[in-house]
Image 1 (cartoon, one colour):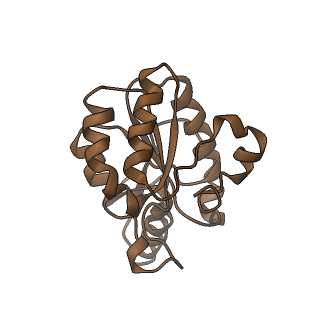
Image 2 (tube, helix red, strand yellow; image 1 turned 90 degrees about the horizontal axis):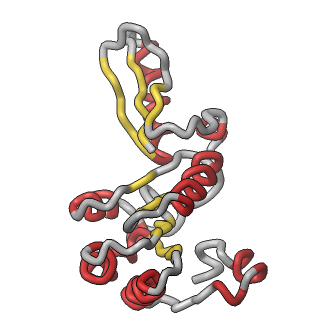
Length: 192
């Protein structure tokens, strides 16, 4: 899956540190657990929709053992162009259900920042999820503060607060603008 996840560049740069198990998500997670148990820090890239296949391994081989494994969940959220079977809409629920911290950056700057921060401070399993495709200009403009959440709209006396994370943040910004045109002040809270 090195091409689908965009890791072919990493593979060319450091082939001895790259293991492609193909479409064997269960094996990928157990393999990562083995590496982590020997002191390595594996980063496992799996499409969100296919992570369901490896959920048991995530619980038993990684989470219960509290191993340092970073899961890079590709195609998280609503995914245009990949069809109905590739909508990554379940992962946040099942990761949080077993107490694994989930990070959902909304743009490339946040993705880069949080990937580096998670690798440097890894203690137990972590998940970073990101959308497929190009960065949206409205989200790129937000940059990265390095904080776990940001209030975006700056409404002093907001009638409501819209909360989102990841690429879906673009939708709450548009919704806040619609509400503003209707005379309601809305603030936007973007979680990472």
